[in-house]
Image (tube, rainbow, N blue to C red; front, side, top):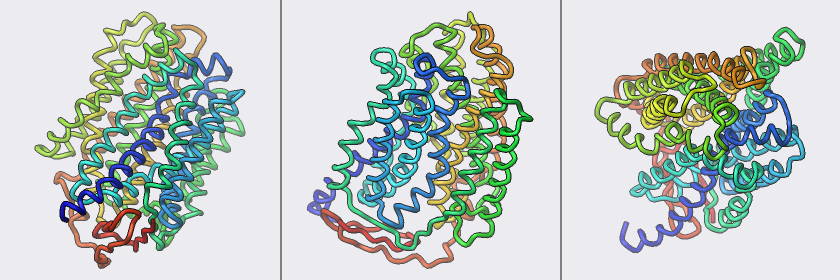
Length: 500
């Protein structure tokens, strides 16, 4: 590539990075931004514990179950087109959430937000990769990952600050001007691309959507209606049957969204189950601790968000060091150590939580949890990719992202169920009584995740990843984009079509 070509590609690459990173920031932010606003939402709109759970889970569940389907829609019918469609849905649903007159309307808007994020989010990396030259792709992806990490770290702080100084509605209004600016810019600045051979797994989508909804519905409503009540039993049993059907479908279907054969590799099984359990323990604990800091410790929403930064913000500091450590000793011990530290942090919380606990006593647990999270995140993606052949890496990444979101939804449901059974919102002591056993469950889940992480390969790459792909890879195609030639990455298993 000569200097002229390098200059010609710089503009589109920068635009792609800005647009996709901004969209990713919004989608990642909305995972945790609502946590520090929950007490204010409860005070304003009313609602019981299960309503607050659905305020979080309505987003994470729809995001999780539709993520791979959204990616397939973009591959087949146009990535730019569906990226813009996802942005529009997400932006409109954010406005609807801000205008919600009651808790049920807010939950519905959050579910639609998740649909928009599920279509938009998986296409960000595809669009970015296509727009950035291979020589600069590492830098672009590093910036993209840092922006997404910043969204996760700043979620509780942004949510708390907006709630305290404006109102909780502004955590959703924030998305609207950003989304309205991104939509026309994406139409003008991103190149369209498709993978015409992509297939949609509609039966699989219905099976996993219905199954996870049934299970989460049963868990959320178990304490309010009783574990043996008709609706709860129906949700749990029907949901389990549908998830079982999804597993069978994954083995038998010709082109399922999640090929179950991948789980036969112990490393793939180990890192994905570890991810699910990590998010189960982490999300469920943050859901309760964010409320504890306000309702029991007496901090304002902004103060609570800032006090959670040693946990949620630590990956921004430690992740680069964790990456270098993984290069030296391998990813497996780093991930396992990170999960172990996260488990110790949650156990520490469980030992000290009481109505009079000081922030100084909580700080070591927050720091340990933050370091653990950073050690997990840095090498986890590389470990995941080392367990599959190149042709399966797209589905492997989508599977891992979906399972993380599922883990978050289950974590809020399971830990809140334990909280409700052992305590409640009646008094500071009741809140502490419910939080302690829930945190022990979270710590146990993450400790189990640390054990499962040890199933991953010792080496940085496995035979599965190193083995030649049995399907001959087509030569890289050069197709005309809006501002010059763009080379489709080598090894692509589907024919790409790119148009201005």
